[in-house]
Image (cartoon, rainbow, N blue to C red; front, side, top):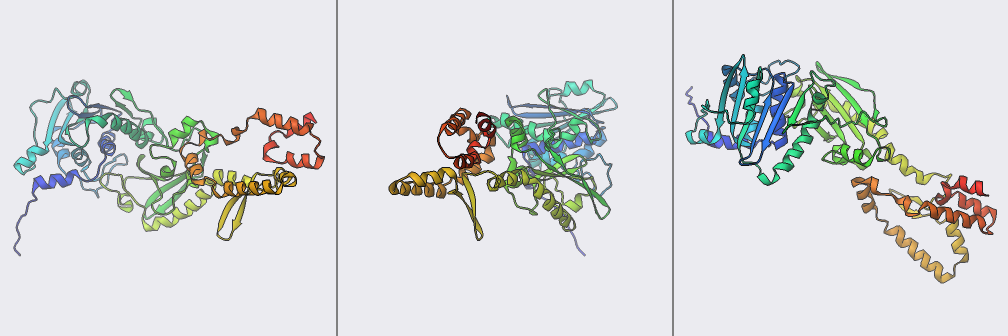
Length: 471
């Protein structure tokens, strides 16, 4: 059998390699994974837009010798199927390179181990010009950010991105803000030191990140449902559902914070953790539909770092999906949790059907539909039809039908979704006016039966004690 070696066109291959699909924050998180694997306890990120955009990430981990650094710079340096220690967040041996190449054309890695500093550089333009993977040992790197800090450490590694070309200087500040939020979420277990291998500190331009736990576990109104252990092959999977507090239970600031950057609707669903590192969040994996009634439902899944093949985890560690065998259990858990998680909304919605209070509106079911209608059994309405002329009754009827037909449901839903704390509908009628109405009611010569019927309406339900006391 005749064979021949066909080498790829390196220049073209590099362009394809750069377009795997990393975002800026996902790429930085991939670099931090390596620092955590190297047992770092502190990570400093220096980012500057002027004079040229540059990003430098320094950790205080184990560091690498010259030979280890060269191997780390190799693409696919490790077998993805090899057994790793539980704290290893990598898999393919590609993350350092693919994440960096997605954002910049020059990747310099400087590492210190046993008192010796080594440096290597990938320059994509230089590689393209020579059509070969030529790794550079730079003669000078002292001017790069955080090198002085590395020299003062016993060990550690710096990753430097230069010739950053995937975004402009104008949106650099916005990207850094998004990066802070992303890292605070993705690494929140490490930052808090809870349920983790060790506590980690991350600084961006000397500002320390604070952990952001998406389940708001510190709030007393958060419901944590008993975790469940699922076995898949020889793997152990722990599923723990949470129901976040309704907006009426927390402040406007806290409600907005736990909406995350994506908002409540896109933040509902599963949160997949691999070795304590959050990989995927805000997805139902097609097992359930998005819905406002489930905005408070978040389900935590914990797996170890030996389950990548079962979950289809990609190079970026930003895509995963449960196996067919696991989906049955997840659907069962979804049904149980969403039934509870929708109660803060459906429970409040059922108040309109409460028979002990006479409402201004009621629900009218019709086959597969329902609509909201003004309650014509309301005592105020009944009083009006007994005293109004026929002409005025017709006008009232037209007005009520228009009010019912053009109830702005979409607008109400949108405002409830975007900022529910701003909606203060009951405040449209101030308490002082309710008191005034109550006084007029008590001073009137209306018969007792009619007064009693008014006392059962929404308008006076909160003033019953006042009315009883005054009478």
